[in-house]
Image (cartoon, rainbow over all chains, first blue to last red; front, side, top):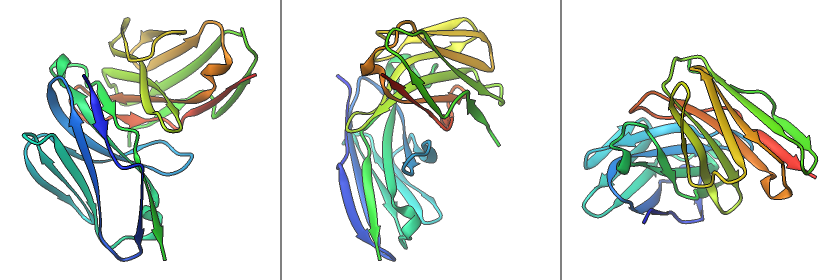
Length: 114
Length: 111
């Protein structure tokens, strides 16, 4: 089966660090994406992991462990504008990556408080 | 910059009407996707296309059809709109292995 789990909501304080976890069970794996979605807007791409380890991009980092079916998104120096939903998505490996079909989690709503 | 546009931001239709949602991308992407997004359910794939005139069913294709006559345009058709199709509809496009780029979305209300 195909299943992606993320916490529904998280709260953090401005200036702090927050880690959003994602676990997945999918038929085949061919890469994991993180997207940010502000209320009423379209998702925008944040990061991509296909190999184990940490990918860093400014204040945002993403980690992947394929053996554990686990990823996290790390947000440092939180700002109020980081309040948004964060979506974890896994490329459906059944197609061998040929079609780039993604399976999305339901998203984690992050509230950053002053 | 990649640009994905959708024909309407807001749409109100009556039950039983035929509804067309249009999506256009300007980056020559092979893949195009139609999702709907509902609270608590996340993004669910309706249909996708990996080439002109090619289409594949996603996870929830019932009640929908699609058309891709040109590479840049992917249309979603609700043959007979029903109230349970009230939702946010998002179109996306991508190259074969890169991230998907999303359009601004169409909030459809069926009354």
